[in-house]
Structures are given as C-alpha cells and as structure tokens.
Image 1 (cartoon, one colour):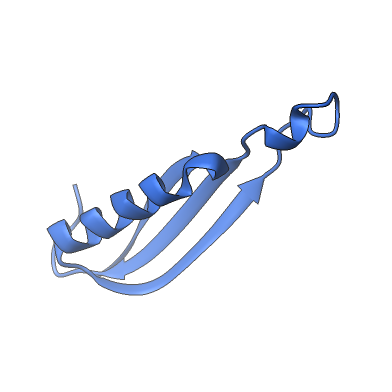
Image 2 (cartoon, helix red, strand yellow):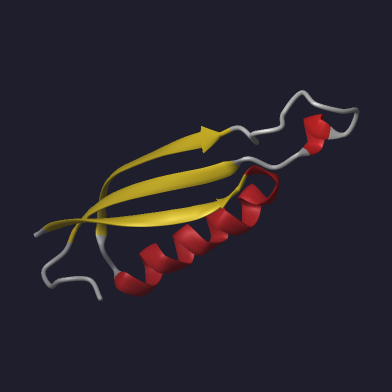
Length: 71
C-alpha cells in the first residue's frame, strides 16, 4: 500500500528536520519510494536589514510503500 507522510519545518533548522525524517523512516521500517520538498520564502523577505536571515517554511513529502496503514 502506498502512502505519504508530510513533514514541516523551517529552513534555518534543516538538520533537525532531516534527523526527524530519518528517525521516522527507521522507526516505521517503510520502503521510501520518493522524497520531494518545497521551500516558501518569508512574506517580508527583502524588507529591512535582517530579513535575509528570516526563516522560510519547508514542506517535505515522503512517499512510502508499507504493508499496513500508517497511524
């Protein structure tokens, strides 16, 4: 059975998001079919001197094959 799992984070904390996804894959034992993602920029990017450091949202979609439905 193919299913998807969504992960959301911010681009200034990608190592933690990566660890979270890898832990979930190991814990569930699923077979990963594909991983894709999207980065959205901060709405106020470009406004002000510190805006280049504003975090954007990251959405990761993991498509998996599993024998039983994911909870």
